[in-house]
Image (cartoon, rainbow, N blue to C red):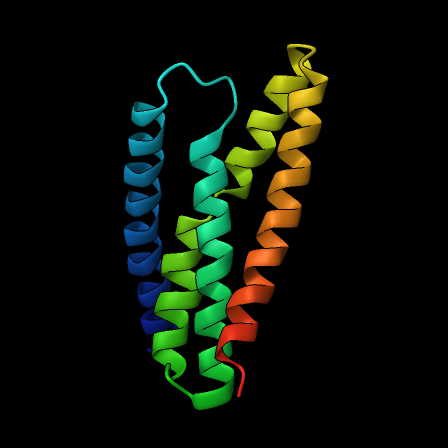
Length: 127
């Protein structure tokens, strides 16, 4: 029964994270309606990377999340929230439209800012 519990925790967390991703991405796209760059996905990925750095770091250093909390928050909520599948699709769409500069900028920004945000989050909570 433990396995079913774990699946449920990750699934419910993933649902909540996906809904948050949808709402935040929609808000950004509404705030910048004619942007030809995927700012919503960028914001979601960078903030998700930052949050996983902070929460993962706190969990490793101070055990703020137990096994169930780790499954629910880190794998479920943040796994559903971050959007690298959207990142891949949007980058390929930019490249397909021969917008190579924006495609490259998207890859560079997602990877560098995401890794930087995760490092910053982890660094902020390390003792």
